Length: 154
Image 1 (spheres, rainbow, N blue to C red):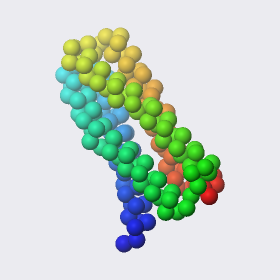
Image 2 (tube, rainbow, N blue to C red; image 1 turned 30 degrees about the horizontal axis):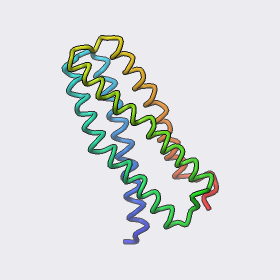
Image 3 (cartoon, helix red, strand yellow; image 1 turned 90 degrees about the vertical axis):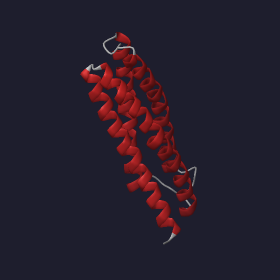
């Protein structure tokens, strides 16, 4: 098997894991928080945090490494408008994701103390949602950029 296709397969697979885990985490966390059930929120928040460390974080690393290797293999320029756009989105998504992880720990802590109906819990959940929407939207834009490459890559 050609190393390019193996690298491309790894890149696509990690993008799929990243996107699937992200939407799954978002769905389960959002739905359980709507229940106001402290016990359920505590369990789901713990599992969401675990999923972020087991799936999301490694997928981000694999995405970056495989992306750079694909750039080298294909001879794409690191100063091209396409790469600058992709890198900017990658950084933006990361800047949204880091506070989301922190917020998940805080939500779990509030649930542990049965504070799921507190103003702090609702405020954190609102921030969590407001950070997740642009981050996930940016992932969709990145998929589009990866497939169509609308800007110069050389």
